[in-house]
Image (cartoon, rainbow, N blue to C red; front, side, top):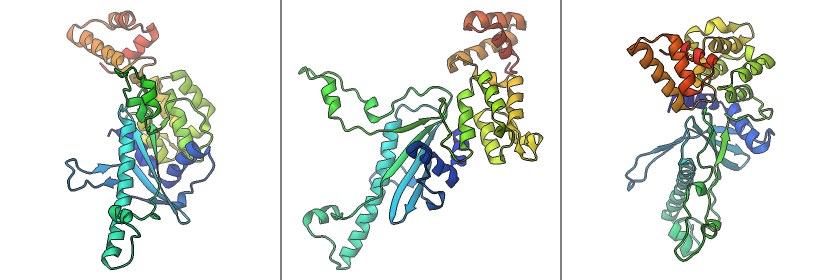
Length: 332
């Protein structure tokens, strides 16, 4: 799953933060969902006896019990782009509905076997599901917190090839009648207004769009004093998502009376060049190529740093400053 995904999921297990996500993105920041109404739920969906594949496990799922109404809320966190994500979410939602339907069917069967009048007609008996029976609705959010811009599908329709029929019928006509399944996607690597958040998620998510923007990151830290007094759990989460290596081992150096000074920790990361691990404007492929080139030239051929810097500028269109920053990032 990856340490970034684990950090996000661990942070969102808290009921206040979990409710905050849904309140912000569903209800514009209004406290429709109250943390005290949240209940833990099993993330595991057991396989049916005839199924070859094993159990399915959701990232986080909770029950919202408000009065007599039950709603199922779930979050699927993604650090990498998944090009089958709408189908995955649809599958998880269907498994939840199947689980609820099975529960209703078992209860109806139990009452029927005890001689209690359960079914009014053959249709109810056939499905073991009465006309008045109801199940709880499922609401799933896909929370993407990776560095790359999301270029995957945003709904089931995006995964389809409607094509052109030999009869001349256009794909648009077929698309019109397709039963789509939407995906509620949140990309926290995009700049957005997070003022709707009531918890520390606001300060965590606000940092993520600047992981490849040193100047923007410095400005964010300068203008927001809350980064100088973070609680320990938030500080650790930020350290993982921002790539601050070894934070846990040396976190006491950043501890002050009001909390942990993450401005200092992030500033040190920038100054040491470690943020160049996510070089601005460079794709992962370019980044890997740069690192391989530096390793080959420095270790195999003993070429001087000045020549390596010149080659980085020539082959990867880096500025002179960025080329030297890459060299000093301690990756070779």
